[in-house]
Image 1 (cartoon, rainbow, N blue to C red):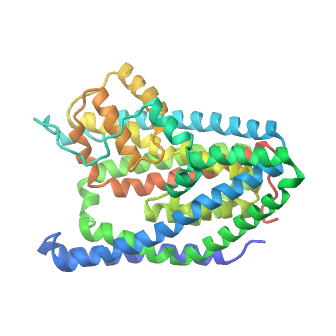
Image 2 (image 1 turned 180 degrees about the vertical axis):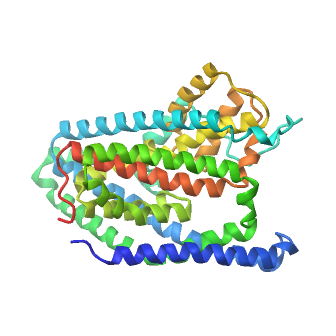
Image 3 (image 1 turned 90 degrees about the vertical axis):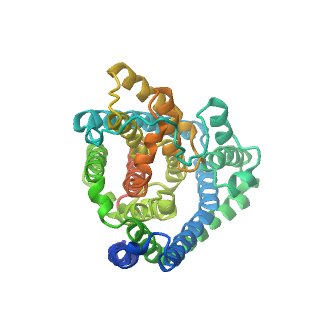
Amino acid sequence: MNSPRPNRQTLHVALGLILGIFIGEGLNLALAPSGADSPPLSAIMEVCRILTDIFLRLVKMIIAPLVFSTLVVGIARMGDAHAVGRIGLKAILWFFTVSLISLLLGMLLANALQPGVGLQMPLPGGQEAADLPTVKPSLAGFTEHVFPKSIIEAMANNEILQIVVFSLFFGSACAAVGEPASPVIAALDALSHITLKITSYVMHFAPVAVCAALTSIIAQKGLGVLLVYGRLIVDFYFGLLLLCALLAAAAALILGKRCLSLFRHIREPMLLAFATASSESAYPLLLRQLERYGCDAKICGLVLPLGYSFNLDGSMMYMTFAVLFISQAYGMQLPPHDQILMLLILLFTSKGMAGVPRASLVVIAGTLSMFHIPEAGLLLLLGIDQLLDMGRSAVNMFGNSMATAIICRSEQRGKQPGS
């Protein structure tokens, strides 16, 4: 039976979002004219950053124990290594298929809508710095983010993919050992329930964090930033809505009327991911809501962590969209064969960026240099990256929800909604 509490929490988060916009615009009108470095505005921004950072830190402290405990318990109780391999293979095939669709959709929309054509930016004389980590996609870098040398280090750095790899070994070993491992499995099962309870405590702070995050963005840049980059923002969000519609249609074909219940259950995590510009912030809440919807906890514990590493649908669409936007802004139209090559490169290089700060921009920077497009073009996006990140974070979370529910359905392990 559904509890009314999630509805109240959704309302509180939505109110925090609206309040943050009003407060931010008020601060922008009152204090921004005196300069972005004015002491009052800087002090308020510092408080907002602290409040948002507290919430994100509280969420991140939950992720490692939650992923480890739910995944190990799921694999151990599944008992069948073939079942684990089958579910994992389904998940990876789905992730790569949807990633390809997301990249292709971004490419088609950027070509059709031409969001960067009107800017007519002159080619830069030098390569201005975009203040991004100098990380180049490579096979060696990818393996470092997949295989842990220390599970303690992986948990400390919230390297989800490394935690997943260790959990796969640990859970399979527990299943193979059998009865002697029962106390460990029971303890980890209790840990997962405790961690989900901690999640409910942390979520009480979500409206405050959402209000602070929106206040910080709007106070510094004002609502006017939406007008300056209006066409790019509208075109990109149109693309995100179209991508969500495609994912929802796939879910409707497989889940039937149950997809409506799924949408109701994930609306709060989506709103949280949007407001904080972080799909990671919604992970614990999303896991709980998917289980409430009726997804098998064992499958959720396996598919969802993999999705957070391999299935970032909104970010994938953003990569092709952004590269073509920058090339159009400089009057450099990429020929079709280069665009296809770019799509294939992004399909694989993006999978090796787990754990890299501002990973989407890092991958885009590397792709720009491959096609001799000025990397300084990233500076065109940095001013509104937070606004764009809000949308793509929500879509990343939406895509992972659809993938988990569909794979649960395909395994015929999902319970009826509300059961």
